[in-house]
Structure formats: structure tokens, C-alpha cells
Image 1 (spheres, one colour):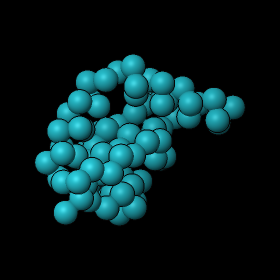
Image 2: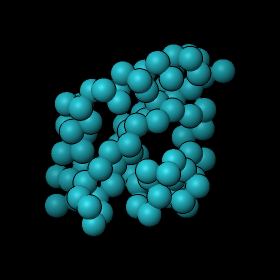
Image 3: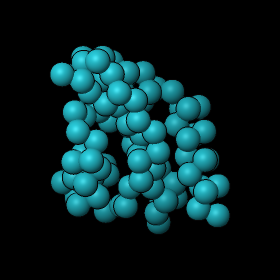
Image 4: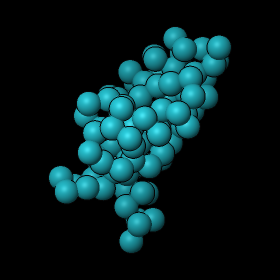
Length: 87
């Protein structure tokens, strides 16, 4: 079964934020985040999918998520792209 790792972006009252996660269904997971049923840290914001990778297995997706969560430069670059598109 394949998995996806993704980066979400949101511009809100507290400023721009990113969130990194993994899932087997991107559409369902994004809807969960935006409806308040996602991770606790994503509640109360509107999220946009900024980046996604498809991987061959759930384990690979979880491992890649771990790496992306620690790659602040990539997350910031993806977020800057989002904020430039909104301007």
C-alpha cells in the first residue's frame, strides 16, 4: 500500500505556519485538517496543500515525514512560495 507525505501551509492570525504529515489518502486528510478533525495543532486554520510526495509504502512515508519535519529550510522555502502566490 502506498503512502503520501505532505506539507500544508496556512496564513492566519499568528502568522504563516507549515504542518508536515503522512497519509494514505491526501484528499480525505486535507478535508480532516480543514474541518477541525485533523491534528490538534492544525485546528482553527484553513490549510492549503503545498507539497506532496507519493512513496511505495506507509513505512517510507513515515520515515520521509520524520526527515521533512526536521528540514526547516525546505518548509520555509515552500511557505515563501505560498505567501508570494497570495500577494
